[in-house]
Every structure is written in structure tokens, then in C-alpha cells.
Length: 426
Ligand code: ADP
Image (tube, rainbow, N blue to C red):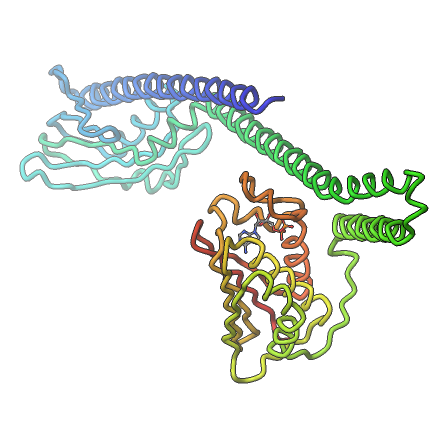
């Protein structure tokens, strides 16, 4: 699928999902408000009935005008200005709430109107289909009776919100399913993008390989053409010359194929490390000496800031040498002119640190994580002039991890890059 149509499909699917989520939230909110209204009015009527029952119980013929007031979302007061028998009040509250299926914890308090004093209160716990009766008949009988005619009571529902949410179980279930769908969708998009990236990386790799092989193949073709001319027999030195070219180019091709195949199939599990105590400072000096010709050719200056004390680590010297070659090779390759490389080593608390810094073209922020992946090369037009297969840093990372170390890069485009390697001592 082409890039922009893939992006369009992802966008459309995201917008559709966002729409479904918004509708679900709106419906959930509507259902919650509806349930809230229903519960509030049931509580209101239950409390009004309790107030009327109390008056009847007290043989009070007067009628109450709006005795129930919802002071807060979960707190009601009921003005009766009469005698309150706590036992009767508690039983009536339970009965009225029970009749309406309102099984939620409540706390009732009795106030004395004259001084607005709290005189009694109790907490009643609700179970699934009943109210828990902590009090037995004897405690019930001992509940106080307030005999003056100026009391009112308040009822507080501390778990009202949880109760309301519990009533929306079907809605919550469908919301969880929707969430599952979104997670699955996000995962599918992630896999799709990973696949797309992989195919892009492979395409770049193939382009790159083709480019690398083209030159020796065409050199061989030209040489063969010359050799096929009959008059070449007359100039044996030319014949030898072209045969040597073919042999050299053929060797180069062979070496390149071997390198690529070896690196491309290289995995951590194939590794056999021949560990020995190596002095990193000596190893670095040796590597610099070996690449001296390349440094001169490219006008590269190397500055060494090596720790004065020997930096010794237990590692496979062949692989550590290779990875130093790779880091230095990149530092030279990805610098425009007069490369300047600074190598630093340090003994740390539990290991050693090596850094290789250059003043090259730098690596864009979004590519810094990916450069350690196999076949990845920063996709930038002019970089393709620089030879490579995107395998060097993946080798470096695999090696460092096999030694239980880590590598990271700090880089700014146009200013340079710094590769920092940490290896444990043992
Ligand atoms: P190769 O150099 O063969 O392409 P590597 O795995 O060594 O492969 O590097 C991967 C990519 O990381 C390179 O293609 C390049 O884009 C980027 N890169 C690596 N080292 C540097 C560096 N020192 N400066 C800038 N870019 C770098």
C-alpha cells in the first residue's frame, strides 16, 4: 500500500474510533445522569415517607410541607420538628430504602433544632440485597428516644457515586470492550507501521547493494570486452593488466558478498566470546595506528583523551577491535571535510567508558534510536554517496550487549555525533 493511502486509512479509522468513543462517553454520561435523577427522587420519596410515618407514629395530625431538602448530592435533611424515636427512624429508613431497591450505605443523624446540636447518629451498611443489621433486638430496644418536639434528622449516603457506577454495569462492560478494541487497533497500526518500515529498510538495503556491486561488475564487463578483441594477443602486458583487473574486482565482489552475508545473518545467539583482560587504551592506540593511511587520506585528526590509569576490561579483543574500527570508520565517513575525532576513556565505578566523538554531519533526533537496527541508514539524499549497508552499528550494539554493556549516541545535526560505550569490568 502506498504511504499516503496507508496514512489516510489510519487517519480515517482513528477518526471513526474517536467518534465512537465520544458517542460512548456521551451515552455513558447521559445514563449516569438519568440513574442519578432516578436514585435522588427515590431517596427523596423514601425520606418523605419516613417523615410521614414518624408523625403517624407520634400521633401527630399535622401535615408536613416539603420536609425533605437535598443539601448536597449525597446529603438530605428532613425537618419534622417532632419527637424522634431512633429505633423507629432506623427501621423506617431501612424499610423505605429496601422497598425501592436502594441498597446503599447510609448514615443518619438526629439534630436538636433548638441548639442545632447533633444528638444521635448511626451508620448502616448495605449488602447486596439487604441492610446489614449490626444491632440485635436488645440493642434496638436500647436506641434512644428523643422526647421533645423539636428534632430533625439528616441522612448521608457516603457511597452514592460508587452505587451509581455499580448501576451502570452494562455500560461499563461495553466501554471496556471498546477500550479493548482501541488497544487492538493501536497494536495493529503499530505492527503495520513496523512492517512498512522494515520493507522500506530492506528496499534501501537492496538499492544500496545494487549500487555497490554495479561498479565492479561494469569494470569486469569493460575488461572482458577488451580481452575479447583479437588484437589483445599482440600486447601481452595489456592482457595481463586487464586479467588482473578482473581478478581484483572479482575478489572485491567476493569479499563484499561474504561481508554482507556474514553481517546480515549475524545474531547474538551465534556468538562465542573469547574473553581476556584487555587494556582498552592500548587497543585504541593499535587501531589508530592501523588506520593511519586512511586518516592521512581523509585529512582526519584524532585527539586522544585516554585515562592515565590502564583501562582494563574482560572482553573479546577481536570484537572490541572491530567495533572500534566501525565507530572510527563512521566518524570519518560521516564527516564532510577535515574530520576531527576525539576518543575518551575513563575508569568508572563498575566498568569502563569509551566515547568516540566527531564533528561530522550529525544524526537527526528521530533517527538516533534506529541507527542501531540492522540495515537502517539515515534516509537523506546526500548520505547515499557514502558507502555502507547499515550493518556496522547493529554489529557494534550486538557486541556490546553480548558483553553486558550499553551504547548510546548524543548527536546534533550539522555539529557532530558522540557514541558512548559502557562496559562492565567483569
Ligand atoms: P553504514 O555506515 O554502513 O550505513 P552503520 O550501521 O554503521 O551503517 O550506521 C547506520 C547509519 O547511522 C548510517 O547509515 C548513518 O546514517 C548513521 N551514522 C552512523 N554513524 C554516524 C556518525 N558518526 N555520524 C553521522 N551519522 C552516522
